[in-house]
Image (tube, rainbow, N blue to C red; front, side, top):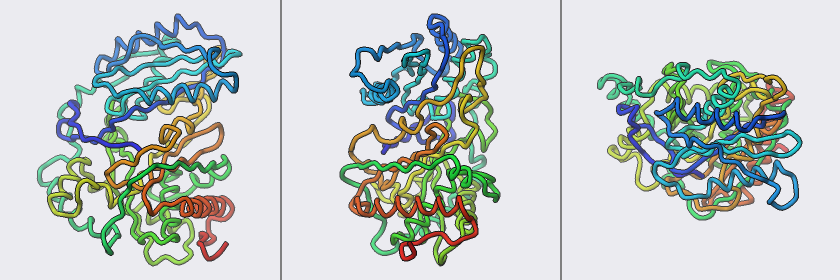
Length: 426
């Protein structure tokens, strides 16, 4: 799980967005003959052209031959994840890593503090380096965050007050009426559910106001599965909220993602079809988007009204889902089409294996999050990574949850009109 911190980001003084305190990593696989000197020059070009983000000007090169023999791709994943374990030094630069896998296979990775770059910016920066390698990088295409210094996603004081009134009514609807919300504590465990490309395509083929969105489909199926296991029918979720898309900020690199709390109400449903669960999921998500408050302001309002309590401020929305942007995949970066150039082929590298907790049991955060869910690509498949903590999410409960989630995804992939499974109907 990832602890969170509230920082006032200079580019958004009116927003005071929520940013993370840890590091994260993303990587691209580059197949073909690469001129490493030219690639190092591309890193320097990007670092010099983006002064608003501090990139280390050198390309950090690794040699896997010194490691224990085995699958070099596995060794590369372990190496990149080990970079996350270092101390989060204030002002530490964002560093590009180059890892030859052998046989003209290579990995270009980027490790950065979450407070400096969000996940989308990691891919954008990796794409910028490859653009510079092929002499296609144009700094003018990337918007300077300083241009957005006066941006406030809420707008007028009257608009902010109207949103606070809405949230005052919304807080009590987040379930947990008998004794308050549960809180996470203790050790963190990790579970993984791999969804093959065929089944994921079925999840992204739905309609509705948000169109095809596989990540929201996972939220909906999680809400139903947790309800079957005894969770209150009005479940609280939290997700990343990318301001670039919703406020048309343009192509900008930096920490421009906030946290969005929302509610999925599956109360009263009995053996629902997938479409009904998705309708309620999208409705809850869109309600919170329309009434969006920057997360620190939302917490402040909740604490002032008594709806939230410290230190477990996220307890009402105790499931966090880190959205995966849907296909395209393969020879593309997340942010821009990057087809094979000359003799090079470029694609995502083991995204799902770079997500979630650092590969071992850790300590749960104290903000009340019980379930931290990452969704990432692995080849043509999708992997759902679930970091869990707290006395309520025992190993037995997690076994049941993964079983229900897997059955639900299979049901959707075969017949979206059939009732979703529940614990009483194997």
